[in-house]
Amino acid sequence: MFNNIGSKIQKAGKIMFWVGMALSLFIGIAAVMSVAAEGGMVWLGVIFGLLIAAVYGFIIYFSVLSYLALGKITECQEQLLELAKKESKDMVE
Image 1 (cartoon, rainbow, N blue to C red):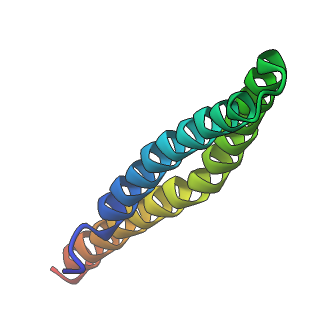
Image 2 (image 1 turned 180 degrees about the vertical axis):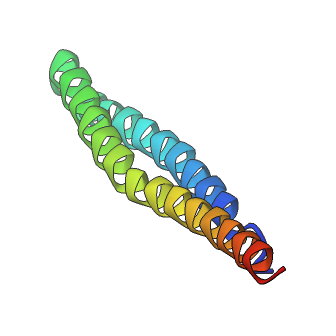
């Protein structure tokens, strides 16, 4: 379960990114449709929907970067531990 945890964290971050992007597009399309259904100005709904999708896309991108960074740090830490164990064995022998 805890083997190769860094790559698992990175995969979870990538999945969260794509789910968040799909959700932002869905919310943007829903905003366009709600403005159009009310009989409002469609161009305003399109601008509002694109704005929502873009802002939420940036938010999800920057929040997922922390997961990817944490996964990379964990991977590098595991490699450093393996290298230190190997070097300590070499010093003992």
